[in-house]
Image 1: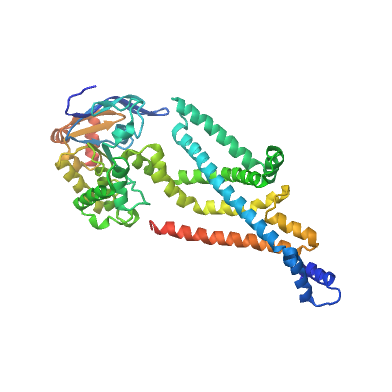
Image 2: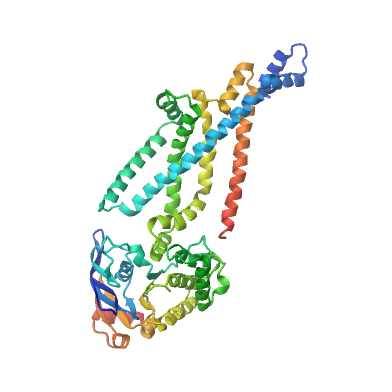
Length: 247
Length: 260
């Protein structure tokens, strides 16, 4: 299947149910290379589920997801190969506590990308330097602050050299004074042209770096647009209501 | 001083010419350990116990990890879901078999299991120790399986997701991420299980396998003196368990140091 070369991820008719609970009710979206898609919505709206479906951490119950021209919802596709190209950052960081920062970052590149240890470590150190954590390379996650953990989680995903980064509420579990340092890393990443899909409540971030804002409500996308239009002139009443509460 | 009664009796019977308590005690000791080099019996019994416990523990860990893998894979992938591939059906069947295994092993006494192994399955074999190793290994496996499963379940789901999101498959995720963390969590419980196993091998005496308990009882029946043989056997078990506990603590400390 060949799609327009600029479309990185194409989602069509995506549905997801947990038992009788229908969380996603047919979502269509296209994510272009270099896009920073910001997904917002009330809790329980399905925005996290949508994000987690993109790399099949949640298996969709309907619809298709095409990533780099391959329908990854097809069960015969080796999803592990494609996940290597989709970095993911979690709300709870999910660093591996039994491994040092450096080991966290080099495990994937060494085992999956078959990089030499030396190569993987050099690359990891370069990334750590970029986020100002090179002095923490040999620390264990339990010795880091929340903000530091999340920055490590971001560079761990980056070490796999992904084509897209998925962020699942990356700042929601952080103390307020640590939110800024993580957002700064994400902004830098966006400036460098990384394709990103970000589920967040940080409207400032959405406005500043988002290229495509999506409002999810009750399992469907009810409004979508560029940030200036989206925030200054919302049309959907539920979005208006939502924005009036969070802004 | 109730417990000294047998010794006093031994002392008076072994050396009627003297009422010297210590001399009687020494005679009793000599009869139990030195006469006809009987200490060698204890040594051989000890070695047999260690052999049985060691190989049974090895088998128990192997069986336990396999069964736990099947059970937790099944629980993670198929709970509340329908089978969608041939692999799923195989997994479902394996899970049922594992459940039957755990139910039967945990539901019947170890001594009956050893007797079944020895008198029925190994009825035509002379390899008594192998029967014991298999019996105790299979027994221990059921308990180890549940311990390992509890360890796997204790790891946060996020660890699994983070590993899968990097592109690791299920098996690699288990090996590199889940099991190392689970192992550390279950080490005390696993140590407990091995301590139980070491002592449980004494059940093999029941079918006449010449391990420590059997030897102690044998000497008792030859010397008509219970004190030294049985206390000696008890102390040897105690020493093994204490040594094992010491090593286990060292390992625990080491694992803890690795991640604070």
